[in-house]
Each structure stands twice: as structure tokens, then as C-alpha cells.
Length: 138
Image 1: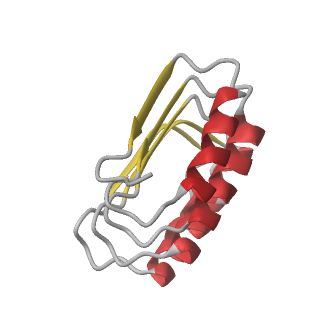
Image 2: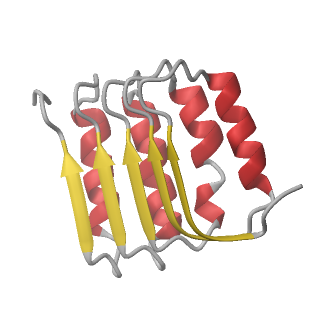
């Protein structure tokens, strides 16, 4: 069974033992969802890697999101995944009003941050932007 339309989808898996395979199951839930207005994903202090993150996020670019919050604090997310998120933001630009990105205490470098900032700057409808790079070393 699946849900075809959701106003808000918030998934808080902070400080869990979540792994990439379990993220695949989340992506399968989202597979038949046609409408989500707000998507919030909290993965603070998990064992998830780019593979698991992308399982979930790859579904989002086709959804008409108005608000997107991604919390990857203390995860093993890499610059490549941030660049993929940047590409996804480009596809979502016409609908997105609010975007929040938390990448505190990660290994993200300028190679990930700069493309993300470029993509964000091209979102015409963006009215709220939250970026947290705490403990980020340029």
C-alpha cells in the first residue's frame, strides 16, 4: 500500500543505526507518492552514506516540493552527494520556497559547498534559506 499525496513528510532518524539498506525501504515508500509539499529529513549521527541518502533523495526531484529540509550533521555525506543535491535543486527550482541544509561536522569541502550555493542562487521562488556549516573549515 502507498500514499499518493502528503502535505508534510518528516522523517527523524537521528542517532539511530540507520543504514543504506533501510534507506532503500524509505525510497520505496516514496516511490508511489505523487505530491509532498514539505519534506524534512533528519539523519543526524547515523551510519548512512551517500548511497542511502541518494536512495531517498533521488525521488524528490520529481515531486512538487515547496519546502525542503535536509539535516546531515555528523554523517558521512561527501562532496559528490552534495553536488547531486545541487543538481536536484536545479530541477526543483520552480516550486521551492524554503530550503534548509545542515552539514555540521561533516567532511564537506568547497567542492561540495560551491556548487550547492550556485544552485541555491538560481531558485527564483526561494523566500527562506537556512544553511548551517558549524565546525566547517574553509
